Amino acid sequence: MKFSEIWVYLSATPLLGLTVTLVAYQAAFWMYTKLKLNPVANPVAVSVALLVFVLWLTNTPYQTYFEGAQFVHFLLGPATVALAVPLYANLETLKRSLLPLGGALVAGSLVAVASAVGIGWLLGASRESLLSLAPKSVTTPIAMGIAEKLGGLPSLTAVLVVGTGVLGAVLARGILNLMRIEDHAVRGFAVGLAAHGIGTARAFQVSETMGAFAGLAMGLNGLLTAFLFPLLVRLWGA
Amino acid sequence: MQLTGLPVPGPVVGMLLLFITLIARGSVPETFRNTAQQLLSHLSLLFVPAGVGVMLHFGRLGKEWLALSVALVASTVITIAVTALVMRLLQRR
Image 1 (cartoon, helix red, strand yellow):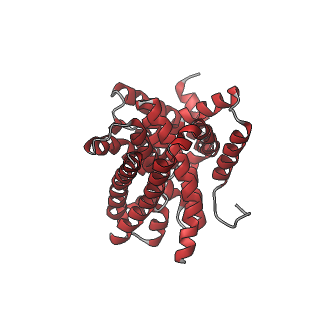
Image 2 (cartoon, helix red, strand yellow):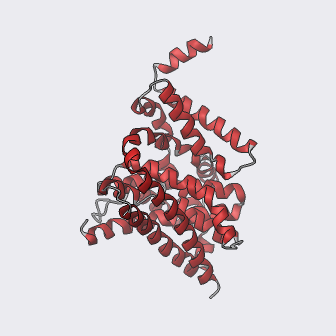
Image 3 (cartoon, one colour):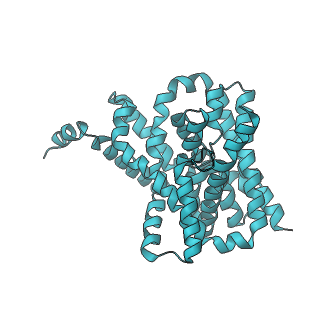
C-alpha cells in the first residue's frame, strides 16, 4: 500500500484526527528527549503547535479533527478518576503533614482563581473570558466542567488550562530556585497545584517524590475547586 | 451532581468515590494499579486535543490576548510562589 493510498483512506475517516494526534505527540516527545527534557520544549505545547499548523495548512476545521481526536480527549475522564490511586498511595503522607498540605492547598487554590480573575478584570477581559479563566489551574476535565456549568466557554477554558500547565512546567524551576526551595515535596506540591497534569507530568520526570506530591496537589486542588468555586460564585451572585 | 445541586463534574465525583472505596478496601489491587499508572503516565498526551481547540478562539484571543496572557503568566507565578511559601512556613512550625 502506497503512502498516498493510506492518506486517502485516513482522511475520509475519523481515524485521521487520532493518528495525527499520536504522530504529533510522538514527534514532540522525541524532540523533548533530544533536548534533555528542557521544560521549554514542553511536549504538549509542541504537539499543539504542530497540529494547529498542519490543520491550518490542510484547511481542516477543528470539528473534523476532533471527530478522531475525541478518543484521546475522552480518556481525560477516566484519567481523572484514576488520580484517586496516587492520592491513596500518598494517604500516609497526607495524614502526617495535614497542616502544611492543607494550608498550602487552600491558599494556593484561592490565589490561583483570585489572581487570574483579578488581573484579567483589571486589564479589561470580558465576563465570558473571566469565567473561562477562573478554573485555569485545575486539570482539564474538571476545569471544563466548572466553566460549562457557570457560563464560561469550555473550549476556551481548555486552551487556558493547557497554557497554564505549560507555563507552570516551564517557569516553576526558575521561581522555586529563586525562592531557594529545594525540598522536592514542596516543589512538587506547588507545581501540581498551579499547573495540574502538565506540571505533574513534568514533576514525575524530575523525581518520584516530586511527581507524587504534584499528583496529590492536582487531585486535591481539583476536588476543592470543583466544590468551592460554584459556592463562591453563588455567594457573589455573579 | 444532582444530590447537592452543586455543579461538580462527573469525573471528580468518580475520583472521590474511588478514593473512598480504596480507603474502605485498604489496598489497591495489582492489576488496577497498573492500569491507573499506564493511564496517568500518558497524561500529557490527553491534553493535546483540547489544546488544539486554540484555533477556535483566535478571534477572541486577538482582541483579549494581552489581558489573558498577562493574567495567565502572573497568576501562575504567584500561585506557585504562594503555595510553596505557605507549605514551607507551615512545615517549620
